[in-house]
Structure formats: structure tokens, C-alpha cells
Length: 288
Length: 212
Image (cartoon, rainbow over all chains, first blue to last red; front, side, top):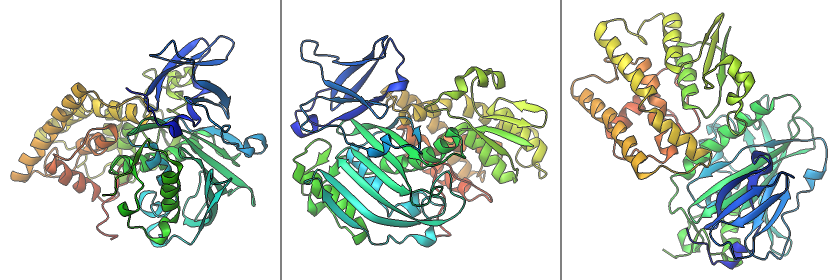
């Protein structure tokens, strides 16, 4: 596989492993942006990253954060996304496991914050045939255009989380702080006024395949971790079986490739935001 | 009291959930963290099932650790109609053949699917060729059945053979095995989806004829 020469893609931070999944004294090989990597964990627990096929080059940058191992192949001008809720108490951390998707990372991110598929792909949990309307929400660019937010989203959800007892209207915000990361801040059904977080850290292997690392930070003392995990895997596997069939696998960003409706506002904003970022990797920039 | 050790993304567990739904059998699920927790490989689970596999069904004093054996157990004990595990020689021969095919040959489809979902990689050309050879066996059998008025795998009525073959076939695309060239298989998948009491699992979508 060939490493991309897209500097915009190279200068990002990517989660490439969950720390607890690599035992001390062992290694794991993986691929990021077409570059084969070896992630090694020493007996002291510390992680190192080396290029599998370029031993003479300087090793990639590596950091541990939020329970994940992060790598950058370039020289990022910014730190890994700040998620303040990891510092707060009261929520449970759930590692949702890695999920492979044979499509571009951007397809995964776009699907994550799309509201209109809920009723038809997650029927009975995140949506229903009788309540398919997407209420109006707004889109904002924050942090000098570094972050994209869809705020004031709401949806009638028959079973919004593992803790849900019945249907309710759920309010939430989506944050997209990098082309390959999205975090949802969603009403807790357990603690009124508090938010649950679900985050996707996408590791693009190449332009048309990726691994999704993900976590949840939830207010839920009742359900077992396995119970919560089954709920998330049900949702994610439904999304995955839809993503498999989306063509082209690279996300089109040219306006002539779309016939959007008003409920697609966040998706259109994401595509325009990707377009002007200069990113090439994983995108289909052709106009027809 | 029936308990099912279950994982939401397991096609084998879905076979059991589906038959329970069709028979109207209630059970209490015990949710196992197979991915990423690998709880089914843990010492605690080995005491439940030394084969380290799911599903496991506990029905009163009985504990059954094999998918086909669970389907047979449920049909024998809870199917008053007797149609899900027919007793006549010809039908029973077919049922047993297809149960074996589902557990042996079609295990490849389930392996490819879980490997792909857990980010372990896509099928090799050799694996794809073998997977398509197995699907072609089903396709040819069903296409012949359409000409001889045999709509189900074991004859005139659905049996546990259909329940054992449906999940790996319906979910093949999740493992990177496209179903485009199997029209008779598609029509049979749809017949299964129209059964009274049919339930889905992630990756299996319902027949929406009554909805849209």
C-alpha cells in the first residue's frame, strides 16, 4: 500500500488502537492513510510507533489520550481534539470496540450525523415510520472554521439508549472537530439536564476502507456494560450494512453531485467544509 | 425458564432468536460481550460452554451448546404443529442435510462477516470463490424448487432448515460477499421475511410491502 501525499490528511491526529487491547510486551500492525505501521507496547506499558517499511525515517508522532493510541504521520498544527467531559465524573466510559467499514471514513462520519435515516435504518430504536420528520436544526462553524457543529437537533426516538424505557423526543448536538471525528452530545434519559457522549474516531486505512474506534460516556448505572454494548452494536451494524452499499465509496463534495433537502443541512455543510479544507484523501472531487 | 446466552451480531444466535419468535417462545437473554470483550473465551464462560461458542440455551435443567441442537430442541419441545421439524423420512433427510450445510459450509460466510465487522480484513479471492460456490448450491436448489413447486429447503413448508440457512445467506454482504447473482435466493429470503412472527437482526431489513 502507498502512503498518501495529501498533507492536509497527514497533518491530522488519528486513533489507531485502544490501549487496553494491546498487552504489554506485544505489537500490532495496522495501516493509516496507506502507511503500514507497527504499534509496540513495551513492558513498562508505554507505546511506540514505527513505520513498517521505512525504518530509516523518523517515527510518527504518538500520544495516548482518552484510552486510545493516537498517531500523526505529519506535523499537526493543533492538538488532539479536546473533550472536556473525559475530565468530569458521573459518566461511565464504554469502549465500543473497533468496527471495520469497507468505505471512506467520511462516509461513516456523514452517516453518523445524518438524521433522516433514523426511522428507516434504526426502526424501533432511534426512529419509527410514524415519526420520520426531521425537525429544523442549525449548522455552525466554530473555532475559526476548525469545527463544524449541528446544533438543536431533535428526534422522536422509540428507544434512544440502552437505558430508555419508552419513546421520547431527544435533543442533541453533533460536533465534527476533524474530518474523521464526530461526537454526539445527547440528552441523558437517566440524569435530566445532563448529556451523554458518543464519539467516533475514524482511522482511514486507505481512501475506501477504515476502522471506526468509538466510545460512549453515559449516565447509566443500571445496565451492564454488555447490555449497553449490545445496544450500540445493533445500531452500528445497521449503519454498516447501509454504508457498504453507498456509491461512490469516496464522499462526493462537488455541489453538482447533490440534490439535497432541508434535512440534509449538516451533510451539505460537512461537504462544503471538507471541500474548502483542501483535503483530497477519501473524497471524490469530480463534478459529474 | 429459558435462558439464551446471546450476542446481538452473532448470526448463530439470530437463528435461535428467530425460531423462538416464530414459535412464540419467550426467553431471558444473557448478553455476552463477544466483541471487543471476548467474554466467550473467558474461564467463567468455559464453565458454561467448553466449546467457547455462543449461542448456549438453558431450558430448565438442560443446557445445549450447539446451534443445530438448540433448533431441534426448540422445535421438538415447543412446536405443536410439527411442521418446523417434520417427521416424514424425505423431509427429515432434507432438514438434516441443510442443518449440516449451514453449520459446516456456511460457517465460512459467518467467519468472513465477523472478521470484516471487527476490522480483521476483507475476504481473499480464494475465500470469495469458495463462498460463491456454496451460495450457488443454494441458488441452484431453490431455482429447481421454483420449477417443482418446492418453495422451502425441505419441501412445502418452512422448517428449521430454512431458519439455519437464512442468517448466513441474508448477511453475506456484510462479510464482503455480494448476493447480486442469486435471484432465486433473493425470492426465498423474501419468503422467509414474510413468515408470521419474523424478526430482523442488524444487517437484515424487513419486507416493507405493508409499510410503504
